[in-house]
Length: 171
Image (cartoon, rainbow, N blue to C red; front, side):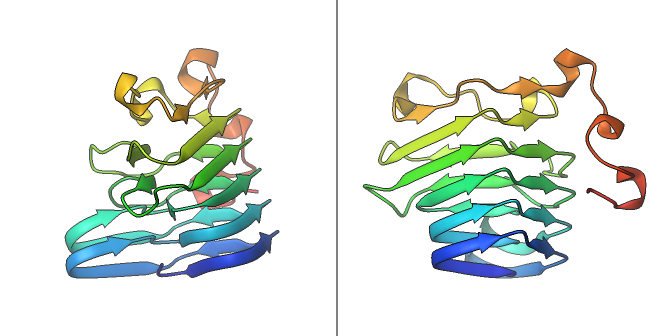
């Protein structure tokens, strides 16, 4: 990860902001955070970017195994804002009560996974719109993507979530 590589422990009440990961071929994961294992809560992952060439995934967060609660992921730039997959076979990823909003992902999804292994749970997460994440099909029976809230369906805007998103204040 360009900002933080987490291999255990707790990240709490932090801001992972303004990191740039420039790929030169190969695999490039985790512009803001690469979470191998551990817990992250009450943290903002903002203004991170993945550029360059190669397989680029997880502009905000690349997950392998861990818990991710009450976080805000916004204003990141690059493919797949949140991404999980490939490297774990018995991992567990829990993403709860998090806001995933206004990330520039160049036509890719805000959240995607590429695995039929491990277990992934996303609950009570707020996405900007229905097209922002992958629609999980039956091949991903290990993914529980229940209780999403879509801002567009509720008539919500950035001013309902943040103090001054237009000027970068995501508190």
